[in-house]
Image 1 (cartoon, one colour):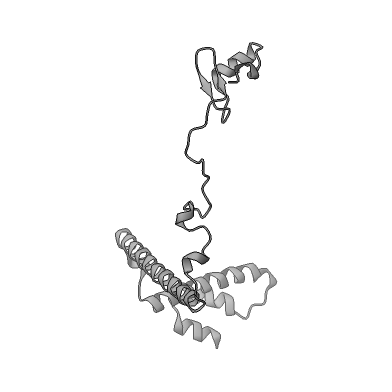
Image 2: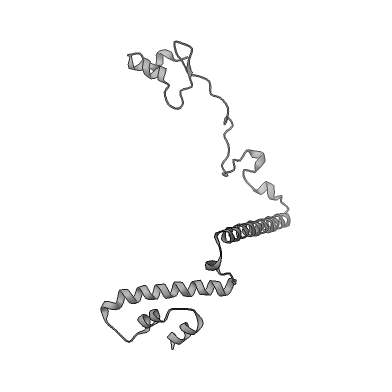
Length: 166
């Protein structure tokens, strides 16, 4: 019964159905039967997707697939923007019911210096750091990052790093 339903509904190869629904109960055929089941279910999923979307991906060229992907990504971004806008409006409405402003409820808004990753930026971020060490030829080093070659060479010759401290 199940064999006729699957064969009538989805384009599945008959030999795979014979393996799955065959009357042979040989225990050695278990892995073969399992592999055939997975393949049939994958084919059913692909056929079901084709029936739902009406798009035959196998029949499309690479350019057509690329255009389809770009269109799908654009539609996805559009839907995400719509959902985000709707969610923000819903939050604003709920905040207004409580007599509050949404911006006052959101910690770390743009006015408080929030990085795109959602973390707060340091007050001294992006500024230069005062040098802590000065070399014999006027070279300077802030003490951050890798030790400069001139200071490594001085330490290798037996001098101490603190001798160059400003």
